[in-house]
Image 1 (cartoon, rainbow, N blue to C red):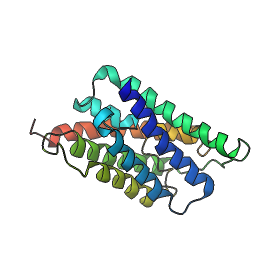
Image 2 (image 1 turned 60 degrees about the horizontal axis):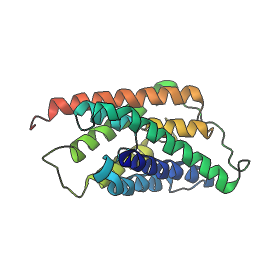
Image 3 (image 1 turned 180 degrees about the horizontal axis):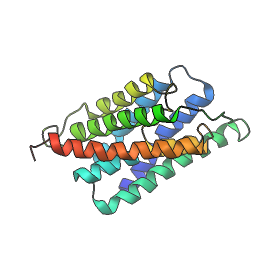
Image 4 (image 1 turned 90 degrees about the horizontal axis):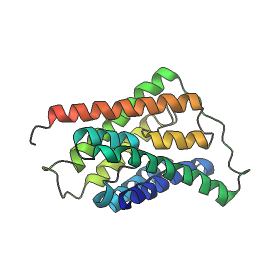
Length: 208
């Protein structure tokens, strides 16, 4: 339960940053979101692995860094954390004050870039936070956060919502920032990327 609570907390603050920066129209949203992920990874990485992302949990499970029986509870915890963040924002500023126009993106472009940058994120997590060769390093959180920053600055808001995370995608759907059709395709691209990242990791990493 400690691991699941850590996943709820980390995902909560990640998504709270996503929806709050969108609500206030922050020009520094990408940096705030990447920073939130980075600090939460450092805070909870030694307890739960600091996934805060169902695609990362799926990749970690396939890689052998997460027990199969824990995969679904991890995903549920992450979705709960994201949903709570949307609720808290609405409670904080008023339900009527949180209004978003759902963003529209071209489906082909969204699928491609959500897949690619989620793949990059999962691949970086596996390489920096789950191997014996990088055990005990102090840069894994920075590497993970900066991967999200690269994606957010490159394609976020232009070709996709910049979720790179099914829990974030579902949460922005709840907040009405993205149509449910695009949420579904985003989640699909994210999970497929997690699978491909795990398979790629197994192919290129041969030290274990």
